[in-house]
Image (cartoon, rainbow, N blue to C red):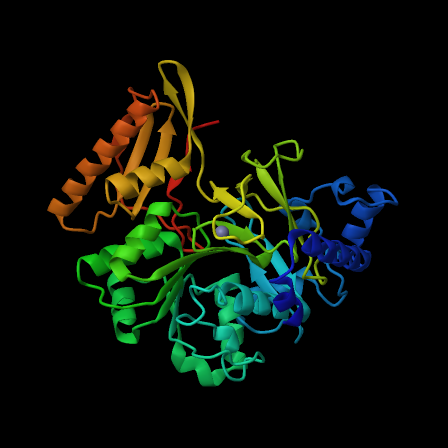
Amino acid sequence: MGQVMTANVLDTQARAGLARRRLDILLQAAQRAPLNRQRLSAAGAAQPLEAIEPLKRAELMARFDESVTDPDIQLESVRAFIADPQRIGDAYLGRHAIWTSSGSTGSPGIFVHDTLALSIYDALECLRFCANPLLARKSAWPWALPGGGLPDLGFAPRLALLAATDGHFAGVASLTRLLRLSPMSSHRIHIISILQPLDLIVEALNQFQPEVIASYPSAAGLLAQEQLCGRLDIAPRAFWLGGEQSASTLHSTLEQAFHCQVREAYGASECLSIGWSCAEGVIHINDDWVILEPVDEYDRPVDPGQRSHTVLLTNLANQVQPLIRYDLGDSLTVLEQPCRCGSSFPAVVIEGRRDDVIALEGEQGSVQVLPLALVTVLEDEAGAFNFQLIARGPHTLELRLDVSQPSAALQALRAACHRALSEYLQRCGLQQIQIVDGPCGPAQDARSGKVRRVINACPP
Ligand SMILES: [Zn+2]
């Protein structure tokens, strides 16, 4: 807690020194895991970080038992642990957290975090995210609830987590763990499954009247629609978004619907607290606990201002399963200019985190279309939030909208989406693209419950 608090006031250079010392400690710990020992040995004696071969999720999972520094951890028993939803939030072997990823970018991953890492994530959430000046007096810190092991920093509001609740995902598992530590706080925290019908979610939220809602951007957009049409009637002070990319227009829609602050968390099952957005809506990276290397498709460094193909994560907080130059799969751009909020923590824009870039055929040849652009067009110009765009071929986009809404509303929304998309595609030199209406509504990922909004289903 103290180390996180101190680093809040350090400059970039001082934090880099801290990160280097933590990296040395991590590399030492990593020698106890055969997979990492081999990777470090191949990098040579000097072991500069850049000399270590990047690690893909598939290799980590194939050599899972060799990736951990606690020999009692075995994939077979880990699999039995995560097969049991009753054990979400429990400590595996009485001492570690196990989090899974949804598998949206390939095969699902399983990640082990030690108690020191959990306390660092807790401290980062509590002191850096929640201590954001705009949130400090009015928002939440479940991490500071009585009995939670952290100092009670003040008012603990009613927090609703709207998420996939049936898996050992980082968000729900973390909150369940905190609830176990602090059962007295259970009346102030409500975990709601996103897989249930929308009217039940709305009913649960109306009843609970949360002051803070944590969820995915796509779910938050839906809630804004429900609030604006009057079915949902809540007055949250803050929305915390995470797990998917969101268009900047979503923030203004949420602010308009709820008159509340909106913050985005950048975390993963590999590291819960990579960064958070500031008041300017820009994500800042906790560079004292995380090393992020944006790289191109050949794992070469990408300069600030350039969009990366992927990003390599080194998690300095967790020693039980050292993740060193781990391919996170996210595409991001480090901003060249300092953020207007004044923070010295590196500022990044995350692009295409879950959605696909699609290639469409125009008169002048193939055009790459960014998912964030399509999402923004549909949100901002057509007022659609619950949608899915699927590229079926180089000339065909399938548009899926919520088909359960009244027919007249659906027709109007369809027309608005077609118009906005056609205009945008024309601006991109894509006059000949056919937009067809899908036979059903957007499909959720079967495990995570999240909606990928732009999908490339073109044959390779
Ligand atoms: Zn900022």
